[in-house]
Length: 153
Image (tube, rainbow, N blue to C red; front, side):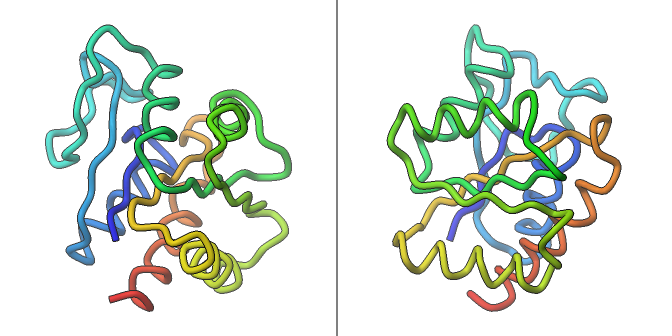
């Protein structure tokens, strides 16, 4: 199992941190210059810069290069989170929507595990709001992905 994201603050980094802590393989694409909401993406995140790209192009490439995408949101998807759904649909890639306001962490982890098994996913893209847009994003996403990785190790 490989976890990928764009290494933005919030959901993206939570997924990568959970994977790094469990020694799972990690990766993904980030914008040129390793741009993120809080400045330059720290080197501890082994994401590759997509030449000439910004957030939108990086998001699309992570959708294309993964077997499926888990999209975590709070109440309703917006901004880049909503754009991720559009890319999944356009690229005909499987995706799972998790409303963190409605689904407890343990149940969300089980839903992700079922999605992985049902769609034979080896490279999982994890997307959702950045920390500046949703303060709860990091903690929720990290717990969900930790649960998934604990049960798939």
